[in-house]
Length: 115
Image (cartoon, rainbow, N blue to C red; front, side, top):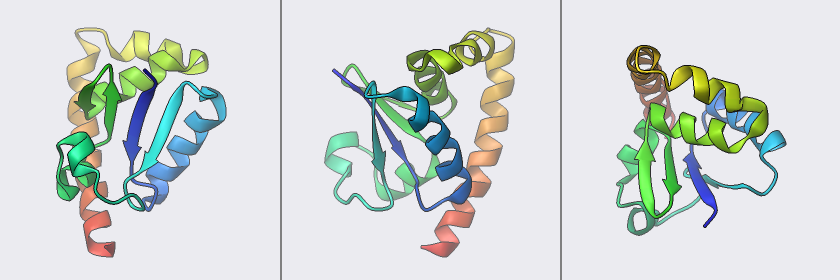
């Protein structure tokens, strides 16, 4: 089963980062733009606000959200695999998670104002 990433393409920061991953992921990852796809609640079990609040990955039938979703993306793309190894370390991941949550919250607010 292919890994599926749900991201907000209407966010310029998110779009820029995801476009970098797309260049190197080949067909390993299916990219789903939540700003243009409708009715994703059934597929993800997340409402619209939840989808905009954090990035989500569907891996092996399970939805992974937030900073952990980056670990999955990085693991799938050989060029970024080293990031998975670094940021998944027990001492580093909690800090990465906090930083992600702060940044994601502000991007969510920005996105909410523009919707």
